[in-house]
Image (cartoon, rainbow, N blue to C red; front, side, top):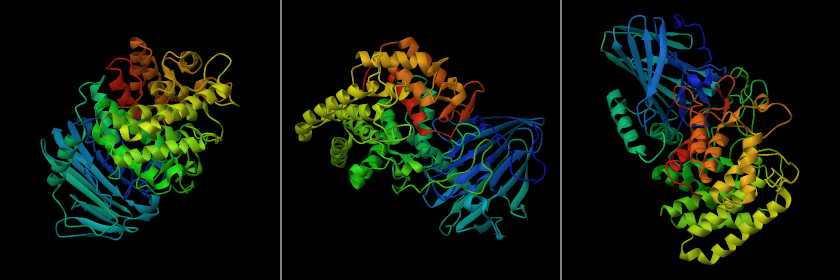
Length: 589
């Protein structure tokens, strides 16, 4: 492998497994094996990208060895501080990389420390920052007497420190960094929607970032695969803003299936996913993420009540309608921003909210506002459970079995966790849960005895594993056992699980294995006391990531490639929850 030696266009696209994530809670950046940062939105998650090369736009920031190299990299434990590591023909060079943490909602601070670990090092550095998904390049730029470059890109203020010898050619600032063995060199890039304050030394940014990460990620000693459990917690922490909202992914437009039109913008907060994050944190004893999830979901329920939307921006605002950009897109896909799910009704969001709030109550971490939110969610289920909804997979409106059973699970969980002030409501919640299960059994019980997807769709659906895991019906209920057996038989291959059958094609021809469902299978087997099988499912799906330990939504089993936006928060949530629950005896809720 050889680095680019001339400023000759955007870095090439890599397989998704080769990217690492830098994140500070307010935005995220993807860095590839050439030291190529090709994706970052600024100032926050749902704003336009300033590095859009990942989806064919302008904008990148590269630190690349000048000699042929073999790439590697790793995260410092319990953090999203990444070390790109290159073994060259001349020695070993590392670039320590992070977004300064915790992030400021108005200012991104991107830290890169180049270190000549073994032997001298020469690296080529390029900055091509362009706001508006590449439409508004940086310029004009000015270099001050300290060698710092400043300028504007659209309405964003930019400052780049550590490259006094850079040359500005077209829209690219480019320089070469030479280091003697053992030396290091700092680069600091700041991007803000407000005038920038006085510069801060790189060493101060690094100390603050190291300290905050050490405080943010618990040890999680009582988990299976502790290293990966802690990493999953760190990833979710990096995706969680000061509002408490955890974005579903850092990216948009990374295709789930090449040339199939399944491209989505996941830079928003799904209520369902947020509930998964909080429940995972509760299971593992990570109270910071639990508190954040409860705070965010509580605020949305108090504000919107029974009109709760499936998703919001990280600040709690409506998600814009879906539209496309005039960009080539990531190979096999196309560019899109906004999300059409903003107009959907998803009944299960109320059930998942109750499951989250009940988990917080069991941990004695649910305040009065949270209980008010629980009352609102329970009342919304009572009022709306007969309506058709789009369901967990956001398809056409139907009376999805998963949605109703999830609501039953949520009602049961909150009834059992209710304090004395709501005990009078608990019996009514249990009765409503019983009615939901009976109604679902009346129109969604397949002749074979398992749950089917909806009254109009007799198919098997892996999502229907979760209601039993969450306590909608007992683990030994014949419907639970029949559903588990059907998913195992019809949707599983080689210990990976697919969501449902789209048609008569082989499963792998329609889409990738769905990692959320693989971990759900591990939880379901664990609930049955099948210890060996549950660990097999866990380990198989835990391995479906790249060197950076990031999970996408789907995994192409044949090619061992990630598919979809990166990293997918709900998969990391299930990694964490499964790691925690498999370390204990079978349980529900």
